[in-house]
Image (tube, rainbow, N blue to C red; front, side, top):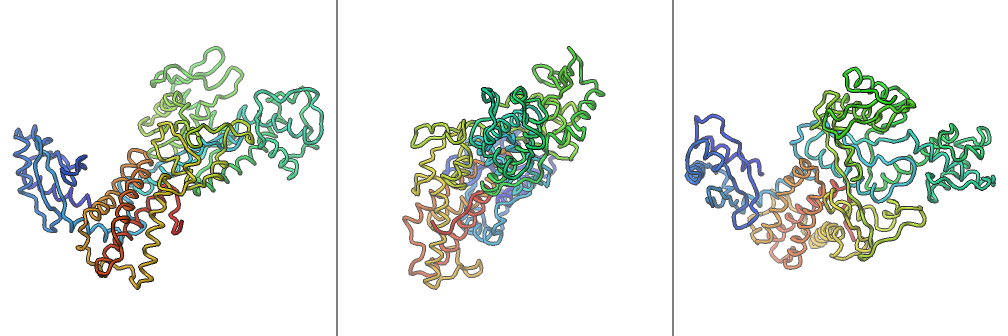
Length: 564
């Protein structure tokens, strides 16, 4: 498609200026103004300085040397200082439908990724509580990006990093022990629930699970004493925390699986990195390179040597390791895994952490440019424009499960992906449930369901879905038909652009615009008419729309319903 046009003009440039060395590549652009054609080239202006010629004259020469044996070009023109405007023939656009038919569910896939190995880590919520809506947006973005990158030809590994070591696990253990005492009727003697403890009814539920399923034998190991109850460094608190986090890990993964079938190829435990010595090994590695200094009894990574605003502690005075120490080891393991690119999806509040991790990557001898971070901005939940109050059931936030239960996985994912990930998002729960054109996900999914209905009615009228060999696509001449086909032809470019820019939200914009065009066409035009040949051509076209809609929704992790 687009590549064939690029090749056509590349040959024209070579023929026009045969003998010239270092001719630039030809790049097609889509003009913002449709009156300027389907594509535009600025190659004449790029060549002007090299050839010392007027760009309009260069453009004229290139046009004269275009050999269009397949008659795909309808019109060529020169605009402004030397742009070559290209209008393609109806025959070319009609042929796109055959390409879609033949490619089927693979239509839109590409090879620009060249099978490069990409590691994308996303969600990675602490196993100390349920996922909230912020995690939901990160999950939708990370999973959709992984799907888009795979479709564009990258070799993608999805990874989840469990922060299952350190104070948060001990704090969870103290919280669990406190609730276990309550459930067993043991008096806490006036000791209040600790300020750093984890709130919410899920803590009580996990405590009950530990008791009922005997996952931790409190009668054998004993409860925390009154003094130990609020000491998060106590070994029993730690064991209770690990037992509780095991339950929460299972629940987190269950939520993600129900959220469009999110699964991970790799789950990395921070606790494991410590246990097998990889964290200490990474610090030793940097120390041997002269990148660790000792001050006030602590060890510091010289991150300021690599663009960070100051050096960072990796080993505290008491010998305990910081989160950064574990993160250095974690990213070293990724680098050792031979990944060409590493993408981390973080919350926006972690922006200050990027320079130190980039610095660590550079310090370990790798290109920091191969490391990217997507910072996910906040989500504000509303009902018809009014803010949703905090959840009473979960203590301090609205859980992702609550959102999925109310609006469904499809609507939640679409809404999370409607805006670029680094812009704040307002999620209207009531709008997400509406079965009207005002609801963007309904509007898009209804396009697929409507086409299924059209095809069903056609079958009842004894009109089978035609094959390319049995349909006259030359009958598709209506302006709206050509416009829809042009949008279908753009889909592979959208997938490629989404992958290269790491912006999966482009697909929701694409689908919304396609839905507007298709529903408008349907409301004005009968698909099945008395002219059977014309009916077959239009049915072939709507089949192309159906394929593209289903493929695009699949990349977003959203279903394509046949009935609504």
